[in-house]
Image (cartoon, rainbow, N blue to C red; front, side):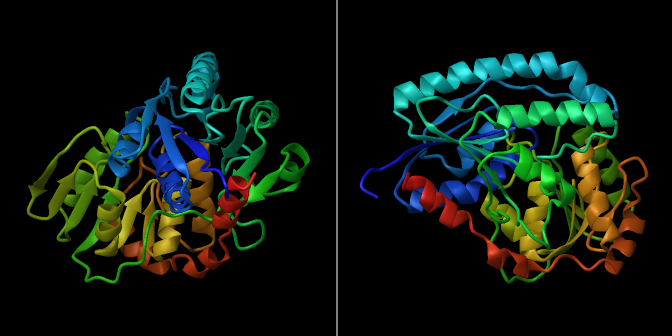
Amino acid sequence: MNDKKRILVAPLNWGLGHATRCIPIIRFFQKQNAEVFLASDGRAYHLLLQEFPDLPIFQLPAYNITYRTSNMMWNMAFQFPKMFRAIAKEKKAIAKIVEDEKIDIVISDNRFGCFSKKTYNVFMTHQINLPIPMPVAKQLGNWVNWNQISNFDECWIPDFKDEPNLSGNLSHGKNVAQQIKNVKYIGALSRMQNKPTKQKRKAIIILSGPEPQRTYLEKKILEQALESPYHFLIVKGQTERKEHFFFSKNIEVVSFLTSDELNTAIAESEIVISRSGYTTLMDLVFLGKKAILIPTPGQTEQEYLAKHFYEQKIFFTSSQKNFNLEEALRLVERFTGFDDSIFKNNTFEKNVIALLEK
């Protein structure tokens, strides 16, 4: 490469998964001597700020998605106007960043407004086929999704094209090739590293996702963990706070851990209890961990993924409403976890190099 490319990486702030799966891509860009700029909002912004304190970072307009009901379709339908207003503001913010910083390439992780006619644009997602239960609504939702992705030059899917793969129907099937141009399956992404270490506790509980469901799950697990003889670490997923304390003798609580700290904490834990967000699943697969998955109520993508892995006897799954800690810790032993050798087929580094050579 003769020229040092200037790259803007902009993940969606919807849980922390979009930001965390961008971390290995950002690190690799840095290894390739690219100049990296970051942009997001909310907890994703704070996470990137802590992971990459030396990189310039910009605040983007917030989507502010909330979950008022347990019906995902209605939640999103009511908020479409708000989302499209945020996307319009996002486009203006990106235009200014591109102009001021002379950006060459924009990597957008599920932010529809993060592209520019002056740059080469990549959209990263694991949801090409939206898991919407009603056929008419599904057709409409997918049309909007595909139409927005068409604004980008490439679409990166952080998964494998063939079996075995991690996203199932979300990113596979005839619709992908028919509706999305220039799709590239770049392999699964994980910010984690394998760290041989002694186990210190029964389970680590990693909380994430939108409120109020994050808090509901935290309270439910705390109440049950107090009655358990095992030791637990609860990571609250609140990047804007700096708390670390013992709730009781067997329950350690921390507001947030950096990637390296979380990596170590997971390695020290026998079992992981978490949401079934796609990025979390990629990390679990990479580390070869047994897991108890609790999908966010009404978030159909997480519900699909949890069911998908439960039916394959890979990860145990429970609904938030019926979650029983003691029972889950017993039943999880019947599940195998995922073969982490799948990561040997990763191609994201090749795609990054090819992108930088454009």
